[in-house]
Length: 81
Image (cartoon, rainbow, N blue to C red; front, side):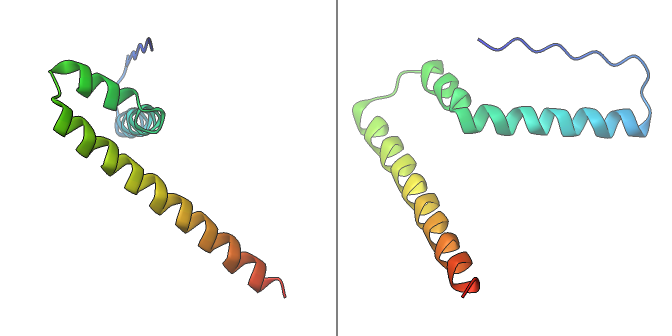
């Protein structure tokens, strides 16, 4: 479980922007670690068809990222020649 405490004593534009950036960073980290997916899945019952569709979506995303990483690796190696 992740414990997060945010305290803002004085609100000016810089603090507000810093808080927004911190929340955005936290949200992206939680998404990357799969915490939000787990929370959403546990929030209500997921029938087997929904579970299969969700896993297929995640597999497609994972495969796309892997393909992009491979393409960028090949692009970088061809630039070195």
